[in-house]
Image (cartoon, rainbow, N blue to C red):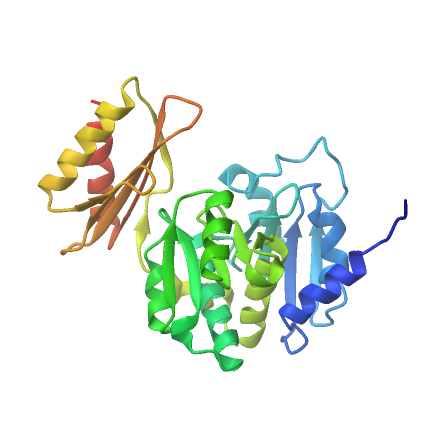
Amino acid sequence: MSERDVLDEYGDYLRKLVDLSGSRPLRVAVDAGNGMGGFTVPSVLGPVEALDVRPLFFELDGNFPNHEANPLDPKNLVDLQKFVVEQGADIGLAFDGDADRCFVVDERGEAVGASAITALIAQREIAKEVARGVDPAAVTIVHNVITSSVVPEVVAEQGARAVRTRVGHSFVKAVMAEHEAVFGGEHSAHYYFRDFFFADTGMLAAMHVLAALGESSGPLSALMAPYERYAASGEINSTVEDVPGATARAAAWAREQGAQIDEMDGLTALHEGAPRWWFNLRPSNTEPLLRLNVEAADETTMAQVRDEVLAQVRA
């Protein structure tokens, strides 16, 4: 039996994948949530001269004394949002317990959607392949059924191919391997990279955002604005006794509106006419719950579709 410390090699490998050496100076607030980010961030980002890393909750503590290490819950982002403003940071990064997910906060303390981050990274990964001489039409990006429409739109704008799959790492990884995809992203801030063994890594995603911000002259909010094209409801859970019946009512309502239906993962209804909208209704695997996500061209339409679908689900 032998032991080997590979932390420095890990950092070297990630910095070869995303070069931060040319970044402008950035003040980076990082909430590690007392998880593994507190162990890895100093070795990965610390050597980058342009980055002034301001640590929050870097002490490793499996009791998570400050807040749950799950930034998907908005209440667990509050500390970072305040910290960004207090520190005058250019960006905030929040990692979950094992740092395989990364959530981003802009200079105003506002959360940046994971779909917008997915679109940004997809564009960068496509550009990297093109710079290597790869035809963009041969480049594949994977996204799940409840990722924003901005993701396949941005991929198509770059001349690459977007492949849609079910929610969950096992599905995303399998589809990525099948299509040799360079990158995959989910609404839950899981980001997967071909060059990281098709695995998800919050650190590499964070480095892509830092690199993009470091190459720009404006704030993060301006950088991300082109990727935030639609109004989204977020995930809304409903406890229902008859999941198939509730789903059937929602499907019937959607068809009446002229929406197209597919059942790749739960029920997805897409209305391509004006105004454009879609919703996905997925059953929980463990509870009598239906999970609703709605996206639309504007807030008014999103709210109308959300309320109509919830009325069918909860009837």
